[in-house]
Length: 360
Image (cartoon, rainbow, N blue to C red; front, side):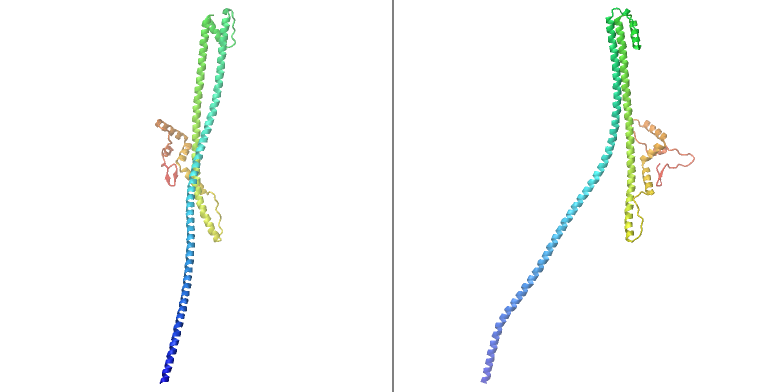
């Protein structure tokens, strides 16, 4: 029994020793496990922080790219606005240049007419100056003859003893005046003075007549030049109208050309041979230009005046007699169309129809 108890004690002591050893090992094992878990946690934290850092870096890069895009978009918008502004300014400048070109052409025509007036008036002025000089020379010659007669009569003591043979008509007139005076010098000088005064008055009246005729010619020339300038401006208006009609048809031709270019691209892709259409006005386009030009009221009035000048003049005279106090205006198209002669037996046919609508 005692031996069994000793064995049990020894076993208990061994077990206690092993337990103590295991407890010591457990502390070290726990420390190693804690260190291992701490290391794993730090590694996972580092990995997570690296991924967050890379994500933040990518987001920052995207943010920078978006800011650059926004700045580019703002610059593009600004450039588009400036482009639209410059386009509008170019259109305005084009319109102003066309207006000033028309004004310059008008002023050129006026300047040419004024230059012609100036040349004409210069020539007339030179001619009148020559006439005045000739008249002054004649007048001085008459005065010299008068003074020579006075000196000759005062120097001669016996006028009856003088023998005077006239060589021209003025000498005959002087001799006739001398015979009327009956050898009295005072009466003779009075008659001679009266004669020269009448002659001077005639010269003055002739000068006035020449000046009046010159003024009449100036006014006539001004009216003719004004009519010519008005005809020139009317022609320029008709030219502008014709150019506008051509421009309208050209726009349609350009649209048609764009469509044909698109069709040609399609045919090239499909490897189909297609004839190229050139930028040439077709007979239909020319007919359309003619129709647009004829449909204008001003052109119709001009054609009426050219085709029926007698009736146009008659209508113009009636119009002037009715409105003498008012400014001159162009007659209405309906009134001109009423003047067109029509046959009494047949029904009334419109003078000109456009797209199914008659003009009168």
